[in-house]
Length: 170
Image (cartoon, rainbow, N blue to C red; front, side, top):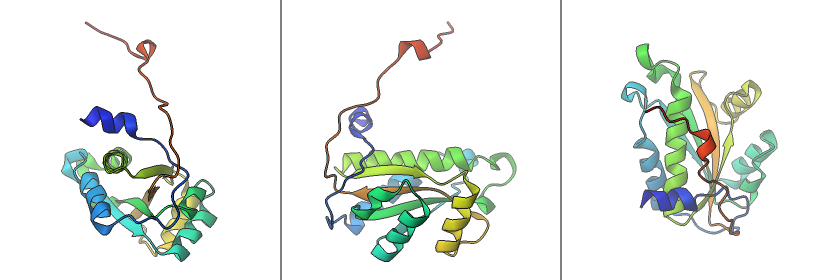
């Protein structure tokens, strides 16, 4: 059930070092991402899967909140291709990439993997550093980096339903 994956999803910051996440599992995460809704079905996302330790270390140097990558199996960078959004869909890439990111997180929880979502957009300096690191064109905007790995920690739930945040109009 989807509610189980939603409840099980946690931001994991400690992973079993050198634990394997298979290419098949990564493809399942990316398939889930690409099933997300997007404005006018523009599907403005593109993904970078980083497994090379040298590049993961570079990410941790340019983004201070990605230190969990030192033990994660890989990183997935969700990017927006601004050339894919035109007309009515233009400018909606944050919602579209956010939906794709959430799908990755939920699919990972379903597979028993841990993840941690670290934002890049809208920090212009971080966007430029990631564009430079991965030799991206100006129309490719790094949105976030997701640490993926086998969790080395268990966390309890943090979210809950708050009636006070709901306004009913009947």
